[in-house]
Length: 228
Image (cartoon, rainbow, N blue to C red; front, side):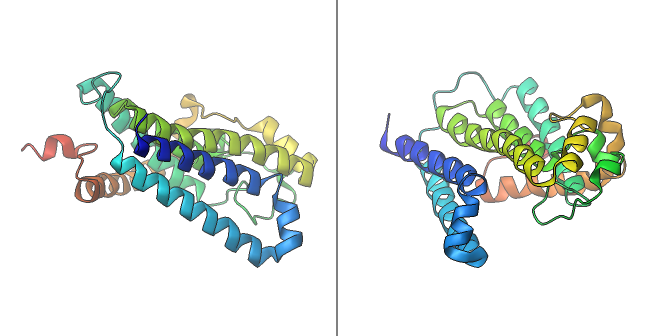
């Protein structure tokens, strides 16, 4: 394994590992020791450094060989659809999401899930997961599997940890919410996203355009629009 790929492995392992540890088992002890502000500062600094190292190492690591032709029509269309769905889920996750830190969930057990929460109770983490899968589909190299795979692992394991923490903190409110909602997205419920599908389109177009301009790699519809 080359030096850049090894650095990427270490960087992503540090990013994912410390994120999970500081979000769950270490959080209470660190808050007692450093205070809430100190904890957030340390948490942010470690995460930023580890992620920055990973991004730089990703750029230097070899992009080949690839497990399949990610530029072929099928993986590219699938990836485009997944990132569009991820955009809708992410936008829907910003409003009224009881999974977000600091949200008051008192009485959540009396709430009937609607909108995005008929799809999944973790729409933001589901968006990150779909983003990771899409990138592996179109660029199935070792560096992408390490980077995107780390993000997928963080989203899925972090969601499970969040469920356990909130169930311990809020008891019946969160446990009832868990029974009424799905951990993984339910494709049959995607119609409940409603106007978020409309809002997601310009966001998706902007993000894929920025992908082309900043990463110099066409994404989504820009693959074909650039050829016109």
